[in-house]
Amino acid sequence: MWNRPLEPVNVLVWLAEPLLRAGVRATLFGAGLPWLAESLPSAAQRGGHVVVTDWSSGLCLAQRGTEPGLPSLQSHSKILVIAPRARECAAASALHAGVDGLVLSNCTPDELVLAIRSLAEGARYVCPEVAQRVAARGHGEQLTSREDQVLRLLARGQCNKTIGRQLGIAVGTVKTHVKGVLAKLGASSRTEAASIAAEKGMVEIPEFRSRRAAWQPGVAATVHLPA
Image (cartoon, rainbow, N blue to C red):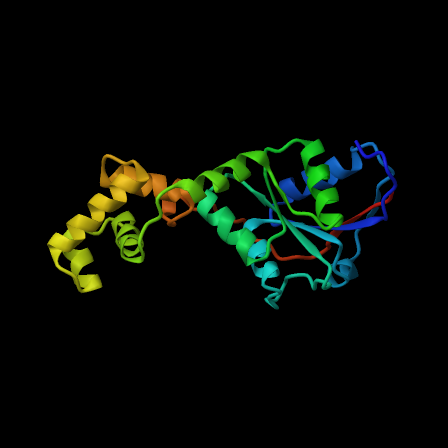
C-alpha cells in the first residue's frame, strides 16, 4: 500500500476497552510491515507521532488537557479517534476542537493503517461515511439557538409547558419552535426528533449514550511503524 519510504512513526495506542486495544495492536502487527512493539510504563509519558484513542480521551487530548491518567503529548502529536458510530454533529465538533482523524470501530485494517499514515504525514483523515455525513450537515438548514435549547429539553421528555417555564417563553412560542425543530430534522413526532438528534450527536440521551468501560491506565501499548 505504501510505495515510498517514510520516517518511522511512533503510534501510541491509548484505548479504554481491552479488546479494542488488542485489536488495534494486532492490526498494526498484521499489516505486513516490520512493526516493533513496545510496552513500557514510560511510553505514555513520551507522547507519540499518532495517538489512537477513544472519543472522550481524544476530545480531552485535542485540547491538550492535563487530566490525570492521560498521556503527555508532544506539539507534533496527532490524534486519531476510533468511534462506534458516525454522528455528524459530534464529528464536526471534534474536528473543530482539534482531533486530527476519525475512523469507525468497524473500519478495515487497511483503512486504520491509511489513517495513521495520513496523520503522520501531516494530513487529516476522516473515514468516508463520516466525511459524507459532515458534508451533508453543512448543506442542511441549521437550528437556531432557541430551537437547539428547545430540542435539548424536548429530548429529555419535557412538555411544552415545562420547556416554556425553563426558558422563560410562552407555551405558544414553544410550540412554534417545536414545529421548526421537527421540520428541520424531517421528523413527524417529538420522539422521532429526539431519536434523530441523538443519532446525529446533537443531544445526549441515555439509550444512545455510549458506555465507556472503566479503565485505569497501567501499561501503555506503543507501536513503532518503521519505513
